[in-house]
Length: 74
Image (cartoon, rainbow, N blue to C red; front, side, top):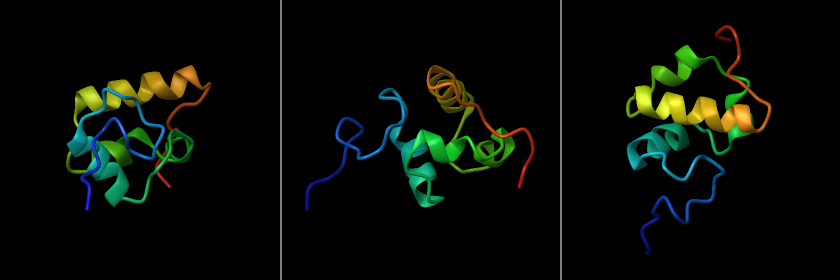
Protein backbone atom coordinates (compact mmCIF):
# COMPACT_ATOMS: atom_id res chain seq x y z
CA UNK A 1 0.00 0.00 0.00
CA UNK A 2 1.38 3.42 -0.95
CA UNK A 3 2.05 5.86 1.85
CA UNK A 4 0.14 9.15 1.65
CA UNK A 5 2.34 12.23 1.71
CA UNK A 6 1.32 15.82 2.15
CA UNK A 7 1.57 16.42 -1.59
CA UNK A 8 -1.07 13.84 -2.50
CA UNK A 9 -3.36 14.02 0.53
CA UNK A 10 -7.03 14.07 -0.45
CA UNK A 11 -7.80 17.20 1.58
CA UNK A 12 -7.68 20.92 0.96
CA UNK A 13 -5.48 21.84 3.90
CA UNK A 14 -2.46 24.11 3.22
CA UNK A 15 0.38 22.36 1.38
CA UNK A 16 2.93 23.35 4.04
CA UNK A 17 0.90 21.85 6.88
CA UNK A 18 2.97 19.24 8.71
CA UNK A 19 2.13 15.55 8.52
CA UNK A 20 1.52 15.31 12.30
CA UNK A 21 -1.02 18.14 12.00
CA UNK A 22 -2.67 16.44 9.00
CA UNK A 23 -2.88 13.16 10.93
CA UNK A 24 -4.34 14.96 13.96
CA UNK A 25 -7.04 16.58 11.85
CA UNK A 26 -7.81 13.36 9.98
CA UNK A 27 -7.92 11.40 13.23
CA UNK A 28 -10.47 13.86 14.60
CA UNK A 29 -12.58 13.43 11.46
CA UNK A 30 -11.69 16.65 9.62
CA UNK A 31 -10.96 16.41 5.91
CA UNK A 32 -11.56 19.97 4.71
CA UNK A 33 -11.03 23.58 5.69
CA UNK A 34 -14.77 24.15 5.49
CA UNK A 35 -15.30 21.69 8.35
CA UNK A 36 -12.88 23.67 10.52
CA UNK A 37 -14.99 26.81 10.14
CA UNK A 38 -17.55 25.17 12.45
CA UNK A 39 -15.00 24.42 15.16
CA UNK A 40 -13.31 26.72 17.65
CA UNK A 41 -9.59 27.39 17.52
CA UNK A 42 -9.31 26.02 21.08
CA UNK A 43 -10.75 22.66 19.97
CA UNK A 44 -8.21 22.38 17.16
CA UNK A 45 -5.33 23.47 19.41
CA UNK A 46 -6.26 20.66 21.80
CA UNK A 47 -5.49 18.02 19.17
CA UNK A 48 -2.15 16.26 19.62
CA UNK A 49 0.01 17.26 16.64
CA UNK A 50 -1.42 20.75 16.22
CA UNK A 51 1.00 23.49 17.24
CA UNK A 52 1.17 27.27 16.86
CA UNK A 53 2.55 26.99 13.33
CA UNK A 54 -0.31 24.74 12.21
CA UNK A 55 -2.89 27.09 13.74
CA UNK A 56 -1.35 30.05 11.91
CA UNK A 57 -1.37 28.15 8.59
CA UNK A 58 -4.97 27.03 9.08
CA UNK A 59 -6.12 30.55 10.03
CA UNK A 60 -4.50 31.96 6.90
CA UNK A 61 -5.98 29.25 4.66
CA UNK A 62 -9.43 29.80 6.18
CA UNK A 63 -9.14 33.58 5.70
CA UNK A 64 -8.21 33.10 2.03
CA UNK A 65 -11.56 31.32 1.60
CA UNK A 66 -13.45 33.95 3.59
CA UNK A 67 -13.78 31.59 6.57
CA UNK A 68 -12.58 31.57 10.18
CA UNK A 69 -12.64 29.30 13.21
CA UNK A 70 -15.91 29.36 15.17
CA UNK A 71 -15.98 31.87 18.02
CA UNK A 72 -16.92 29.40 20.79
CA UNK A 73 -16.57 25.68 21.39
CA UNK A 74 -19.57 23.52 20.55
